[in-house]
Amino acid sequence: MVKVTILGAGVTGLTIASQLPADYKVTIVGKHFPDDPNDFDYASHWAGACWVGVPKSSAHDRKLQLDSYAGLWNIASEHDDAGLRISEVTEIMEFGSPDDIWFKSHIHGFRYLRPEELPEPATWGMTYKSIIISPPVFLKWLNTRLDARGVEFKRMIVQDLNDLKDLGHDILINASGASSKHLLGVADQTLIPCRLQSLVIQKDWDKGFIYRGKDGYYFNIFGRPDGTCYVGGFKDFGVDDRNVYDDQRQTILTRGHTVLPEVITSDQPKDHKILYDIATSYWLRPQEYGGARIEMEVVGGQKVIHAYGQEAGGFTYSFGMARAAGQLVAEYAPKLPVSSHL
Ligand SMILES: Cc1cc2nc3c(=O)[nH]c(=O)nc-3n(C[C@H](O)[C@H](O)[C@H](O)COP(=O)(O)OP(=O)(O)OC[C@H]3O[C@@H](n4cnc5c(N)ncnc54)[C@H](O)[C@@H]3O)c2cc1C
Image (cartoon, rainbow, N blue to C red):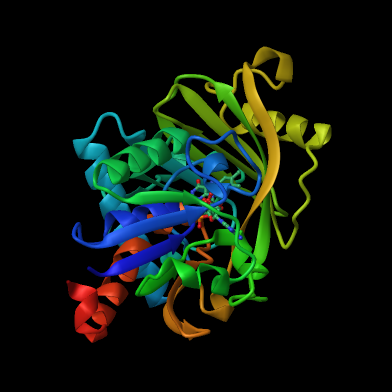
């Protein structure tokens, strides 16, 4: 039997497990699992989350994003309990070019906004159907289904990919997210953090909205299927500061109340039921260093498939990375000794 170990039980590791053949022996190893209390080192718990296409992506990253869009879309269409919902998302822009939107003919319900739909001083905008996710619900849903399929979950903290050798797998998949920066055997110094300060409020709303202004003016809100809204406003590349700043919280609400007053009806924190208020980071590999890393490497004698560094985030790339990892496993499995297939 082909044995695969996946290091990481975030959205990357869980979706990869979902794409491996049912007759493989799959073990997911990690420090954090979906049922655990929230921890800042488990990025998947904190995500918005929405599929948001990245305008200037390489052909490689475009495919990963589109495969993920299709995977998330299918689950949202077929499973009411998965924590996903197909939603209308609107993006308003004060910079950039509509010509950079390579995904416009690949996703559902896309159109550019008409000039009369744009608030001042926006120069262009677009609306399309995307998938908005309640991460805690989706992660648990994946966990339960994998468990039912016989995937084994093993809690373990590793310092080095070599620590996993004794598990006796044929292939190891590294889906350790931010840890790939320091984990021995990977130590990818091209990874950079993206700090996000955001709030989650109790509010039923079924759309998504992003405003990208000049000089770093940013606001986003995703109405999640669990009756909460993720509200963000600070996105700092290269920064990993986990302090929550009162002035940033206030700015997020002021921006929201300015650009979307029908939803953010007040700029005062006391007028919202704030469930949590955080600043945390996820780590990505910039496009100039190759973008999302999905490739095979032999590390200390182990056949390792790396799967990390997704730019817009692990949900936007989830099933794309998972499919690509599954294809690498399928390419490699026939080369394994005959005994691996018994
Ligand atoms: C506030 C916020 C909002 C976001 N919004 C979005 C969004 O709207 N859309 C989107 O696509 N993305 C979004 N993201 C990004 C997204 O959350 C991450 O890209 C994604 O969750 C990364 O998933 P992952 O599975 O690769 O890593 P993680 O979720 O961090 O999981 C890593 C796994 O590896 C395990 N692990 C790591 N190191 C070790 C070790 N040494 N030993 C044992 N186990 C280890 C961990 O325990 C965990 O199980 C957002 C992120 C944040 C912080």
